[in-house]
Length: 322
Image 1 (tube, rainbow, N blue to C red):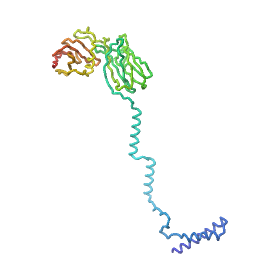
Image 2: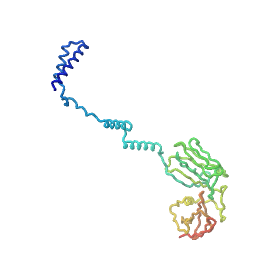
Image 3: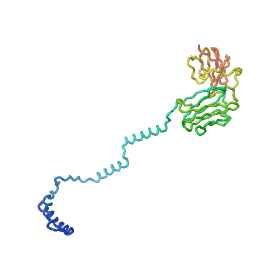
C-alpha cells in the first residue's frame, strides 16, 4: 500500500515537473533529476504518522472551544484591567483629586467673641478666613442687643466678598467669602447710629479659621436694653474675663460653684462671683454686667448665697454653693 502510494506520488510529481520545465524554459531531464532526488530523500510519511523533525499538528478545535476563545479575547480587548487593577486605579485617581482640592493650610474651625471699644489706638481685630469657607460676624452692643449693620466695604473686592445676611440697616450679621488665596485685605463695617466704623484685617493660612465671630461694641446701640435694677449708669466693664465666661470657657483659676438651677451657672474667680444666665438678676445688685448677641448674660458681684433671677416672666430664687 505504501509502495503504490509512493509510485503515484512520483508520477504526479513528474507531470508537474514537465509543466514547470515548459514554463521556466529549463531542460526537462535536469529538472526531473532534481525532483527525483528530493522524492527519494524525503519520502512521504505513512498515513497517521508525523514526519521526523516536523512540528506536531494541533488537534482540530470544537465550535464551542472557538467561541470560548473569542469571548475571552473580546473581554481582554474591552476590559484590559482586572477588577483589582480597576479599584487601584480609581483609588489613585481619587487620592489625586483630593490632593488637588484640599487646601494646604486647612485651619481648625472656631467660634469666638471679640470686644471692641472703637477708641483710637485699639488693636485692630483680625478675621481669619479660608477660600471655600463662609465666615460670619455678628454685632451687638454693651447690653447684648443686636447692633444693625448699615454697610460693609471690602478693601479688595476681587479677593473678598462681604455682604449683609439680611436687609441693610436691619440685620446685624455679615458674611465674608474669600475668592483668592493668599491675598491681603480688610473690612470696614458701619453700624447704624455709630460715628466710628469697625475695621478688621483679613488673613489667610492661620492655624484656625473663624467660622463665627461675635463682636461686641462697648457702647449702647439703637436697640439697647434697659437694666431692670437701674444700673444702666454703670460704665462698661473692662474685665476681659467676662468675655470668657460669656463664651462658656471660664479663665484658668476659676472655680465652678453648684447652683439649684440648671439655667444658672456660677464661678468664684479672684474674690468675685460670676453668674451666667439668660435671665436678669433682680437681687442682689451687681457691679458689672456683660451680654452677647445670643442672649447670654454674665453678672459680677461681691458675694451672694442666693440670687433672684427674672426668667420668662417669673422670679426664681437660686442658691449658690460655697
